[in-house]
Image 1 (cartoon, rainbow, N blue to C red):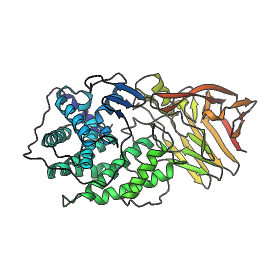
Image 2: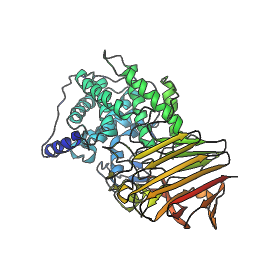
Image 3: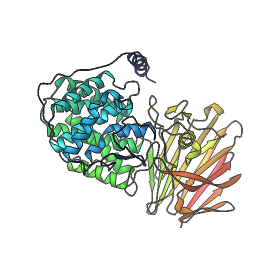
Image 4: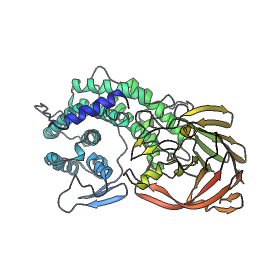
Length: 507
């Protein structure tokens, strides 16, 4: 962690012993901001009180329990985000009624008072008020109090996407309230964090396509806000436009057949979501630049028949790797845009065996040594010692990379991926002082129905010839198909000691 994170954790501990409050002075309603059209939220509430988040449903009979945690903390967060105010079928009176019920019971709220849900809720409420032209003094005062509370509890102990969301919330609050002091906080925070968190190729630095899309949508919302409301003399218009263009570039580069690869903590991002996000960017006249993939560490090897993704980057930022997996040098494969070799995905953030497995090396299409992870993932969002790329060579349609995640065993794993017209060749080499039990894992899409014939794995769409293996096993596995959802499939565990060649032949 950074020194700033450690210091802030101590400060937060001390603050938790105090009662933090805020009073916002406002004599009359300030009105609402102007916004160009933005995508509606996914349908997650069926009136009056049925909520559906993360593939789990809950109906409240009389009153809504905003602290309900039956389906885990992330579900409770979703309940408190109030993004459902932006559903296309939520009208003005219904939204205001829901919001005022929440404000009336705010003293009883628990998880929803944390800075992250507070930030998202502020943005969603202000967007709702803009969409429906809501003017309400009580809501305005509450928004001001929330902004002041947020300012006192900014998430410097976490940094990353949480701190960015804090900044975006303050920006929205400053415009809604016409408050130049809150604007100064927001501008200072966003300018610094956007510069640090958006990489040169446009990726969000936590390297999750899910969080990239989330932050990209927020950058677009902020750009929409500052260009639609000429309230202040100084704005972040240029900074937001530049970052939006970079992020759009990365998204266009990373998708396959309109879908994002479900690497690291990515789930429930549909092709429809991506289409709406891109349409939103184009409606705001965000230009499409053409920068190659770089700092994010993802590389594509393409032919007319197939696409291979090769992960040759860091697992994430050193001081906030919570959404990272132990997947260094993983490959994914699509043939004719259909998924063949896939990531096992993410089905939970809860601290349990499933979460532990989904972040492990064994859950990814790379090499595991001595049944240990290449990066020391633990708990729900923790990483200890982690793999670093120590050599990267790119020449045409051949990429070679090595990592030192097993340096405590004195082992270096090097992988070379070559894209030939009708064949994808993966060569793994281990440099070690002694032999270890090494296993190359391949996870197959359920449609592929693999079968083993000596040293060849026959799939529906291709055949995989294995050279130098000690043993090849096909075994059952489960793939995540969304949060709280998994499906049965099959994986290959290929045992070897020093060298392995995997030839994926495209018929």
